[in-house]
Image (cartoon, rainbow, N blue to C red; front, side, top):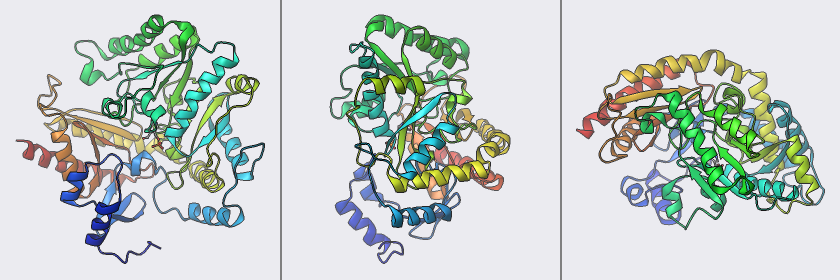
Amino acid sequence: MSLDNHLTTQELRALDAAHHIHPFSDTAEMRAKGARVITRADGVWLQDSEGNRILDGMAGLWCVNIGYGRRELADVAYRQMQQLPFYNTFFMTTHPPAVELSAKLAEIAPGDKNRVFFASGGSDANDTNIRLVRHYWAALGKPDKSVIISRKNGYHGSSVGSASLGGMAPMHAQGGLPIPDITHIDQPHWWAEGGDLSPEEFGLARARQLEEAIDRIGEHRVAAFIAEPVQGAGGVIIPPETYWPEISRICREREILLIADEVITGFGRTGRWFGSETYDIDPDIMTIAKGMSSGYQPIGGSILRESVAQVIEEGGEFNHGYTYSSHPVAAAVALENIRILQEEKIVEQVAEDTAPYLAAKWHMLADHPMVGQARICGMMGALELTPDVAARAPFANTGTVGLMTRERCFANGLVMRHVGDKMIISPPLTISHTEIDRLVELAWQSLDEGMAQAK
Ligand code: PLP
């Protein structure tokens, strides 16, 4: 039982260093500084083992949409664990939480996205998608249509399949990725890569790379295109307005399935239930996770267009599944989370009030001398740090200033993430105006300190 710590911070750090391998962490640096031990959280506030209160500007890992400390979710998990802690949905079996959550997702998903395949998170959901789209085309008698196109600097997860879909070069470098039949086009990141083009011209040019890739590979070989409506882990890259309409046109005209990875953008983050609605995208499949349970339980999935699901069903048994697909406790908690999002009108509140307020404050950070661009979509935002705002120039040692600024944020009581020299936020959707004011205040102070250190 580790609720009330009986170990000191030093003891926890020593045991952690001895036995715990951390995801995405520089072990040497962590050992030198000691891992930060988070012990509890409430609302948007974390508390560490030394009693410091930290404003969580990242909602954990973009997931705690309804904020920490919602007792209703704990109560539902407790009741479900007593009634049916586990059963699977393999071999023609089901249980009420799986049924009710599937129906609820079909209700809130846009258009004819009616069928759900569950996973435990976004990575395994995207692995499912690789298999789903290949099974789909095989069922239609086109087994050669197996290539999936995605984007450099996109993020779709950390398993072998999903990291291959992603376009993160450091992840590919470890372990010989990507797997075959996955290819990447450039991202629509105007600020860094747009050169002299207007954002609109650049958006079109980057979207047309999809068509060029299809021509190069051959339409008869391409199964699908996958992308995040707004790139999250790549640095909150908000596409120019021309981008998604052109991508949609190409997928439609060229018989390519479109997968919107909504793992971050789903469940209210962009001010609509799904990023696809914000960008008027009509995907064939949507990947979901994170905000579906606000991170209180690990759960993810793929929501399919009715007609796509029908083809897959007609293609015979889908030889795929995870022990924890539609886990009853995770499903019950996700349902309760969605109930709270709906009944408390949290998504509407984001659209009408919180996001516009945050945007106004966030844009003020563009006045900071080290900020080249302050961009925001709903409740996800980024600052481009630069030594030369007019030239949109990168720093010489990419990531150093970002890292320093992140460290200053931490020291000042704010979690902001850095991606290279971008600073990013994605706070709980329930953050208040006062807390937004504090977030922006702490961000400015940390930028000042990061800039001073960089000199
Ligand atoms: N897809 C996107 C867009 C993500 O941002 C993430 C995680 O950050 C994933 C997939 C992977 O999800 P998970 O970490 O739950 O496996």
